[in-house]
Length: 342
Image (cartoon, rainbow, N blue to C red; front, side, top):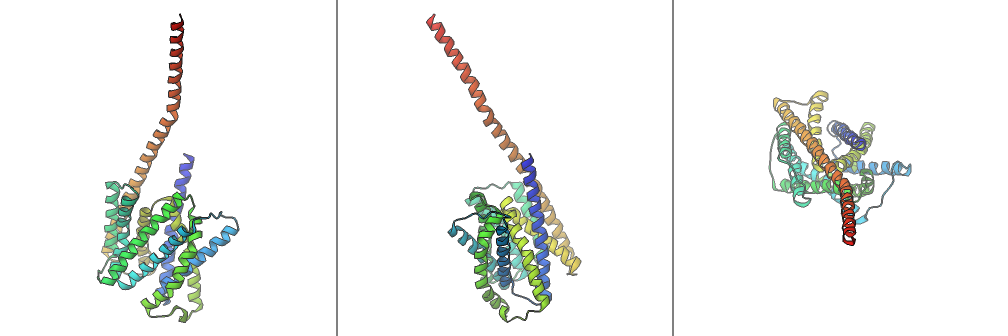
């Protein structure tokens, strides 16, 4: 029971860290891009990952965690896949309307459920599916405004969905199958993610914005916000791997939509963004969906733990019963031998 309580506290801590750091970085980046005119999102992400790797390298040198070697091919492909997924998401935002981009993010949950069902034989109950449906409807009402379709944008969105889903499923699968921690996996894969984005980021950003990141005039306040964004990103990247490893890719996406609702609320409160009745209704529906998802997941996990406990108890008691039966059988055999001798 003590180990289970510790695990639950670890999950709660990971979820809280993920929400707090993600909301913080969204507010920081919004100020950097909207107010200070720094539009280079993909290049900024490569800097985030480089700072994350450097921070983890220092932590590893100071023995805060132990580095564990992972197959180089696995780590390289995993890192490149995650880097490419970030690039596709940014390109999807560049080629589509905000509304269609939000629909792309919403599609990640059902596609993840489909992939885990088909390839990992994972079962999702009808109650879980209903709660996810309510969540997606709520976030859709709150955040999706205009839907403008075009062929290139649709293709990029599909690629973003596929690479993001596969990357997050692998984040969970690699940690469990190779018995590595979230910190160890992030430490090994961050250089490859950073490298692919560092090479492609400036090209993607120049194509989307028409500006060169190296020709941008960096004022002290812009540099200050970039440094702050990179420092927060260390926590964001760490908590992302931690949450996916301790829970599941679907739970991480549910958490992501909670962040969306919080960002909308903070945007209205702190930045005075427009807020309508539609936003309020959508957020309320999404919160109901999240609450139901959390309740059903907790209920099903407890049920599974009780079943596992019952099975383990049966396994523990079976040898004792078998031993008693063997003693009885041997005693009867001895008695029969005595009778036969007489």
